[in-house]
Length: 318
Length: 139
Image 1: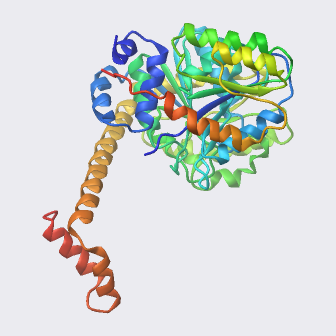
Image 2: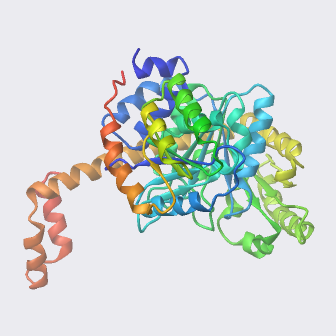
């Protein structure tokens, strides 16, 4: 039996091997993706993001247990950072998900960010497709601990949760651009700690403005703020209820479809861009004497703008 | 792109001494490996399952409790049962010489004992893992 046949028979070893294959962008991985593409589109994607130590992994663990108890299959992608100095990574999200290793139909994969800056790994998007094609009902994507600008998760998920803790800072932090704008559901974790009710109140009053603004289109999502204590399993049921409400909200109002269309569009563009970049790099290597031109520019006989223009014309790229 | 070495580090059983494995985890990370650490008190089933899901090249088990003659063979058998015998099982701990011989005969990889330096383990994996990787027929 080939690995692909084993994949179709839902063998987790095969799933795992294909994830590696896609993650490493090994030879012809695009062909594999195009082959499984018709099998995708069924999984619902939940994004889990927030600052380091806010409890994303613990919350992911509890949500997955909840889903599994309802007989739904779950895939989890947990991203942790790669060291920019050594290329190594310590992936520790599983520590908080120990209870899941004995739960049926939950598949957890840790990914190192491998130089990607957006909070996800370079190929997280593709790994989502692999899990989707394998038949997972829900996919939870946990980002690295993020700050204010690493927001790739929102482009790849249907419902995005942002997890704060009372230590995350006051609401002014949240009002800054970034995290605040991407969340569908706000979670205040470790809600037994001092400052939690204050943070919830501040978030809530800030969100009122957002809720009113959205309402002018006639479709209003409530942007709930949910207080939880993930380690004690408090608030998880309410959180799950809100996720389901959001799912229904975006499906009923055509937002789901709009999101997916935007994802497909940006994916096609990205693939074309990457390919063009590769082709251009090859051409530069084979037919452009860049070292010589650098000398000319330095000597004042040429300039970077006309040199690049000349190259593109000669290579028939424009 | 050069394929990264992925290693699962695990502490099986009730032994809670994790200082050693944390030192190893940092050293492996600094060597450019992707290290998955699953925390304390793992059962052999949890370890084998996590290794498969993470598609690691190797599992490093730290056993300081004296239960090595039970734990290593159980994990080895589980890997075989799950058709994942390509994963190298190695480890470290307080393990007597004669037990090391027996375990290595069963198919366990190198076992490091107190006094070993981290670079030995790094060199061992760098040498051993490329040998065990094989091209698989995908389609």
